[in-house]
Image 1 (cartoon, one colour):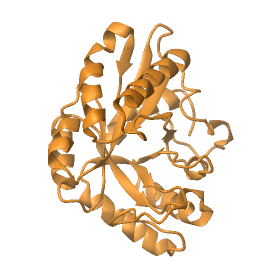
Image 2 (cartoon, helix red, strand yellow):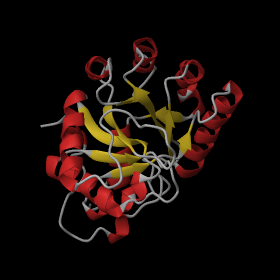
Image 3 (cartoon, helix red, strand yellow):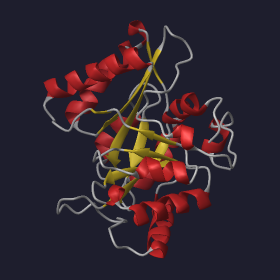
Image 4 (cartoon, one colour):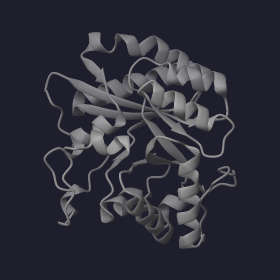
Length: 262
């Protein structure tokens, strides 16, 4: 049984309607205590660079590693992350609106359902210990109903996996499809570093903290850039003094679905 199954014992999976569970971002997650705010952080695009990949794994607290399939160091980083009790996601390449190639193992518009299934399953074999999936790029594919249906149907068949919508487009239907197939899901609130300027990254992190203090929780995605890693190395150790707790993505899911039927 995958590790994720052990961490989501509080989720009751039934066949009832999920109409009441279409939640936007993390806004509807109730914190355990009104005096505590929680954040979760995912570092995307791991697998190509060993040095910064290891820096991401060494960040203080349960920062989640999202690892690209078929990369030189992906399997090694996934194994080391697991050894450090850090959660691992498959960072699934998906077609974007632009011309940029998402990389090996990509899912593209018009791909037959069976090919989507086989590609996704093969990608998961290259990222051991993955307990969930989030999209790499995907501003086009996450708008495609048939293709995203095939993605979620595959995740449902595999079992014990969740989906994090990186929300690379506001038109994404990924979480609607996840709801339809009863796949636990989250949506990111903040990109930390879509501008690599250090001041911008710091301001985005402070915005994440404000979201968490207002809503109780916040979910951020960053990348293994030197600027991002340096900021997190400096900022994460001081969170507790600000009344904020860094938690894993699966813990954030537990808070979202606790006491609710999926």
